Amino acid sequence: MKIPDIKFHQTLNALRKWCAAQERCQQECFFKLRILGLGEEQAEQALAQLISEGFINEERFARTFARGKFRIKKWGKRKIVFELKKRNISEYCVRKAMQEIDSNDYRAAIEELIRKKSKEIKETEPYARNSKLAAYLISKGYEPEVVREALNSTSD
Image (cartoon, rainbow, N blue to C red):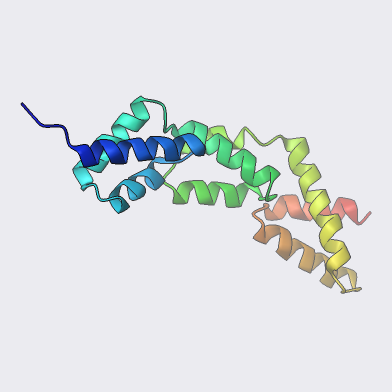
């Protein structure tokens, strides 16, 4: 008869609370389990249990992540996709996450960022001004072709 590992159960309970507080991806949880002192095999076992209990769900994480980063931080799709891939989220989940971003809201966000940033830019020459706006939007993760289109339509 195997004696239950108290450290394993305590760590698992701690992770349940941690995952219940905010959506987490598998990679984050695995690293956290390792930091909390579980060996690789135990961490994988705990991860499997958290997944089966519904505390971790990659698609749910990806969708929540995309919605939050877009609505709160006004990140573009490229940056969101990059960050999801950095967390080893599957292509399927990344595609599902991108469905959370409405194209009209996306366009409105770009226009709002253009208006706000335009007030901060001191440059008066139109080409240089648009270059700075484009660089800013691209750094936020918006696609260059979408940025170009938005800048052309707002300068009309």
